[in-house]
Length: 221
Picture (spheres, rainbow, N blue to C red):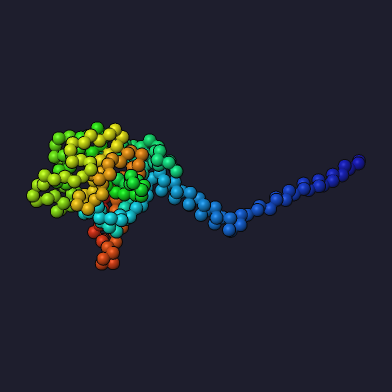
């Protein structure tokens, strides 16, 4: 009886995986830094941006040395290298503290909106008469209202009832005796408004060289 011999099967060839090329440490760090920078730019351009208060025109609401956050998404994020904006959640309103491009030299500035397009505004002894009614302004710095009413008005805008053009705003500082605002140079156009101030996150008193702890985290309505 013939016995059939079975030969062992040859082992299948083992596939050798190609070596995985790892990124260099420099490339990994460079990519992480680039992504972080891009995210920071997007947040700064479209969301929230930090600003420093440079002058006393908004005292005592905002002091020199206050560091504040500005919501740029609320009114519509700015498109880079232009004054155009994306659609926002709402339009700027009376009472909003806004940062805008100063009409004369386009540097940033902070003021409070006291009248919007279509309003009739008049300024009498540093007080606002809006649509024929004197409005309550608890935010005005104490001492800004003269004790004795004056018949003289030296402003370029607002001495007489003035209609705010559509798409424009009449802004004033809370420190009415020390504020270059719409009374002197006119209206702020919508496209020049960059955002609404909403929080003081740091405050430094340069005279005492000490933080103003009580102002940290103060909310700006």
